[in-house]
Length: 403
Image 1 (cartoon, rainbow, N blue to C red):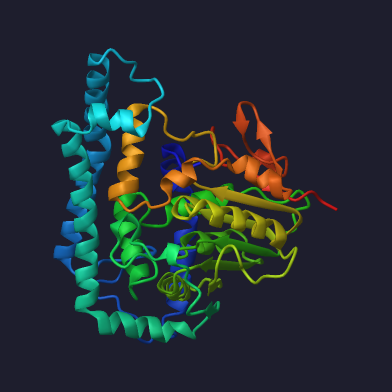
Image 2: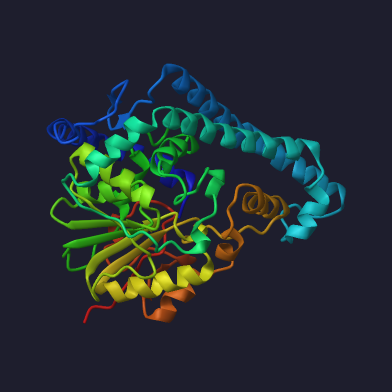
């Protein structure tokens, strides 16, 4: 489950990987003959190419900390006031319509959402403007890496379904419509994580939490919806002897992911493929995972991917999906939460969020034959190496029963 402890408590786990990645970067320097790093790197992260851009992004990150912290508390407190004034319980379950009727016209709550939105739009604009100002250099860098190793890159033009073409998170072009989507997404999400993931710390931490099969056999790993490849790279670093695949529907995303992995000297295979039709053989992988994929897909696509994960996971393997409601965190129910998620659905182009929130993941996984592990009050860690998870709240862990 995505929660603050998961995201920001895992930061220290990344430290040992940074040195190894830097060694790989130095060893691979000759491969990327068109490597474009105007201001060099800090650890794993290539610095933004201009100081004024870095300054602007630093300001937006700091502003996001304010919005996500004190301004959120302010908006929630104001919502409670308005609901109580109506003689209602602020903790009671609400519909979207009821929430909007009470909260929708309030200027304090409105200023909170507008502040969040303005920071989001400016963040994308700053990065995209800079990338396009140096488009030839960035494109040459990707082209030089396309056929370089370690790792492979596979592109499959023409497979993108219509539902994947929206501009998720207001990102211009989304994941499939801008050739520099990977660049834009990577630096944009660094702002989203408020500086806590500049060294891939969150992805490294989550990769370290993924349970392993009971028989400890880990030969092949698949991360679906890999985005710019941070989790896939972290999985390869954790399991250096395994064959790791990262797949995504967005060609620009896997191109960037491959380029970055080559730059870091990490052997991961990236491919543009559908999660619901991965083209891998039956019983192929020991571990299948993903990070923040399902809330960006229609429910039927998620169901199809669960079926595909079952088909391609070997008996005894582990399926470990990580998203907002794949753990003990429940979908929104109070008035403020209903408005919050509706607002992101409507204005932050989270097109499929409401479909996702109504999906019963445990039931869907059990329906196709997965063995879903449950402990205490809700779906918890799997019986397959549950002992290595230290977080209070963890995602579902499912597995195929050993033969």
